[in-house]
Length: 206
Image (cartoon, rainbow, N blue to C red; front, side, top):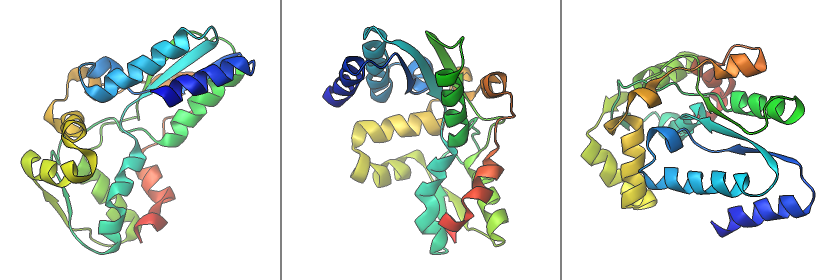
């Protein structure tokens, strides 16, 4: 947490007037989870800094699919839990577009925005979209939460692995599943789809 506090303090001392913070929707959907608490702490640091602020709380990034890039390039099977639970995955470019508007246009100070993509997309559908842009089949299999946890705990640790699994299907709620129109309302353009992201990033999976 020290680095976040130092960055905010450095911005204040440099005379920065307005900061846009990319936080996480988990602050409002799963506040009991460790990562959400960390994001909430940073949000409060910014609010207490004396600078004006806008807080963005995006849902799952489309770019999280890059976790599968190596597996897909090697023509191996993508194995995921909760294969048919759809989340309103957001294109990172839409987060950037909202941030640009918040920084350059009036009316966004002291506002907190939950950001989502235009529709819910399951892991199975994401892999299907990647397969479509590659023009070939991508093997896919659903695994149990327990198996996924065994794989993830090696590089995430127990608490973080459990948090990720809760957020991707093990403990979803209506707030997390809600599709919001915040992106088009702020940017004036439709939110980008996962299919668009897959087409733009096809080379990562070839």
